[in-house]
Length: 328
Image (tube, rainbow, N blue to C red; front, side, top):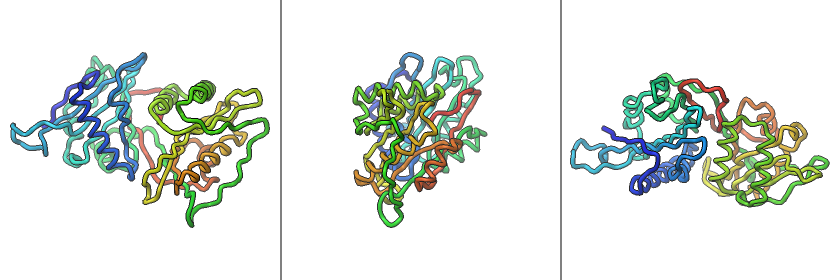
């Protein structure tokens, strides 16, 4: 049996347990690349345009049938609902309690009906989306059982930066009239202003813009900004040189590459990506990781020409009607 209670903010005891769960799951899933929840989301509260809900799921320790066994948090669901009733969910089960029916019990008890008064589970959500990163058999079983179909895909690509399988990186060719700034910390005020200007002119759908803004707000690393002759930002690449183990090698990530709509198709994206790859290599990474939309033909072509290979496919699952394309 499980127990749960929606809340707009976790109390200190639940928050500590959830943070420990999120950290344990992230460490356990790191090499496989499965979904993880940013610890900052655990402490988040509602803000303008977004209502935040937390759902810690508890059960008796070791799923004991004894009434005197202590309750522990075994899973956690984080939900954000915008003003239109569109809900983005994140869900994780503690590694010690996987393959024991926790997620199935939750869905059976809460249901997936978003058409009832008050929205899904009374949260006001009239549609739900959840990304499952990595080819996780549990997510595939769960979504197949309850008839939840994927609505979008995402690929993780990797590129060798050193060793016998690494292709040489070409010298950076900067298009005429464009200047690349030195890499700056992501939180640098000047960099933040330039990032905002690029995002304003990038023609992203609102869901993608909001998700990327949140990722940058909670993220780490550095950013390289490209500007035109007047100093106006044309694009940026966000890289995180923090090294982790992936495919038994030392890996670091290109987190985002965004150009203004007017700056596309001129080779600037390739230039920024090569700069990022060089920086990750110099930081000691053996491979670079990047996630792209496989329906973005330009991004796929650019990465293929730079010797990236596909490593994982990720899926976005949806319940209810949602007009925008999925963010990632």
